[in-house]
Length: 280
Ligand SMILES: Nc1ncnc2c1ncn2[C@@H]1O[C@H](COP(=O)(O)OP(=O)(O)OP(=O)(O)O)[C@@H](O)[C@H]1O
Ligand SMILES: [Mg+2]
View 1 (cartoon, rainbow, N blue to C red):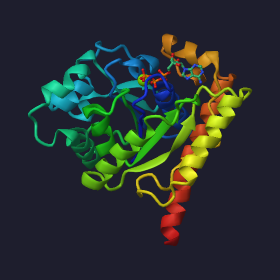
View 2 (view 1 turned 30 degrees about the vertical axis):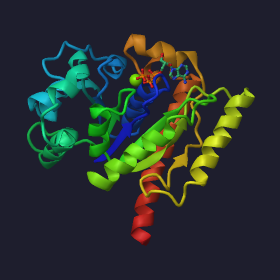
View 3 (view 1 turned 90 degrees about the vertical axis):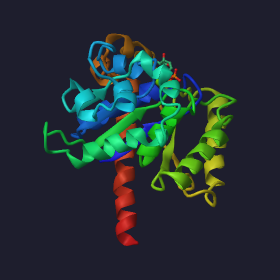
């Protein structure tokens, strides 16, 4: 199973919009997807059409209470399961303060679930997408310790690169200590306004930053900036309140076009990687 955490400690950059619409785009491409909402705000849960608190178990029970992923997951749509968030997640740091190995709890749950996928309830996922909260606390660490890939949404304004070094540093630490497979899959520019000079300048800066980082830590040395830029599109901002992805809410919008294109690149990245590995 492919696993991708959508992370950036900066708030409001498009993490949740990307998590949900990418998850649905992958499902539309025929993949069975599990969307994990690790943000106490529960925006991804709502956006995916699942009412937080309505289901007996949430990501909190998975992390703190010992619930399995199979017990906590809810069917949101065809090919899409959601592990819902709950406001209790905001207290997870305190609840786990004295738990040894607390960064690795989600990873253990995923491994246990992997071991029995296809048995039990018969669910086998092709991809897991984790929506992270806007911080580098225990929830984001659990996500990074669990996944193979991080997808980083950036909003192209003048502070876009600010804080990036902290995120990359955190990824390096996680890769060195607990999850050597961790890689930055790439950066996706969100809420992009192609008509503005600033957006174009920031896009060039971001590309330059990652080009010059090729000799850096292996966790992010090969990161790409995705060709697809998610344009600012009001339909993307409206869709969450209807509990619908952009593909259901406004299938002919720029938002749907852009997220379908991004999903294409994300799928292609896995194909390219397999080919590189085979050639090696
Ligand atoms: N491309 C876009 N065009 C227009 N609005 C967008 C776009 N992407 C996201 N938005 C809106 O911008 C706001 C922030 O987006 P989103 O919730 O995805 O960011 P986030 O990084 O998950 O935020 P947080 O850090 O609070 O979790 C939301 O209201 C969302 O609907
Ligand atoms: Mg969010």
